[in-house]
Image 1: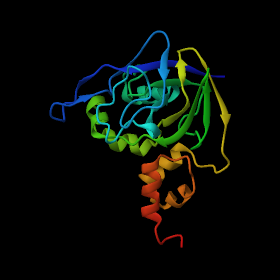
Image 2: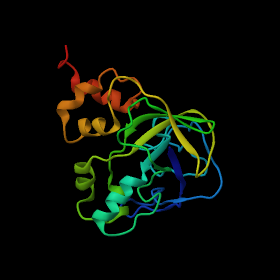
Image 3: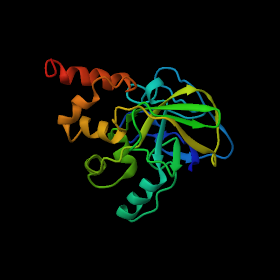
Length: 216
C-alpha cells in the first residue's frame, strides 16, 4: 500500500539569483497534520507553506507537489549524498507510489482529502541553485522523473503515515512522465496531450498553440 512518508513545508529563504525575493523551495517535514485546500492565485494548497514566485508556481492547478522517496533515493545514489524528504521542494513525499507514472487526471485519496494529478514539474533556475549540482536542469530533464503537481478536489487535513489510495485512473494513458517528455525532450509526443482535460490550464494552452494546424 502506498504511504505518505512526510508533509513538507517551506522554510523561506532568499533566492540568491533574484533581487529581494523569497523562495519556498527549502521544504522540511512537519509533525502533525497539515491542511490541504484550494489555494488562491499563486498560492500553495498546503497550509503554512510558501510559494515564492506565484507567476510560475502554485495556484489551483499546482496546489500540491509530490515526489517519490524511491526516486529521491535513486538521485541520492547518483549524486553521492543523502537527500532528505522535501529536498526537491515537494510538499508530499510518498512511498510505494509511481508518481511520475501517475496518469493526468488520476485521483488520490489521503484520508478525507481528494487530489487530482495535473502536471509534471519542469525544473527552474531556483531549483538548480538550490541543488547546487553541475548541469542540474539538463540532468533532471534527461532523467524525466518529474514528480507530479496536483489540484485539491476535496480539502482537509493530511498527516505523515497516512495511506494513499488511487481511486480513479482515466483511460487515456497519458502519464506525468509522458507529459514532461512531450514538453521538453520529445516534442513529437505533444499530440498525445490533446483532449486531456485534467491537464493544468497553462499546459493545455501550450498544447493548443503547438498543435494548431498540425492536427487539422
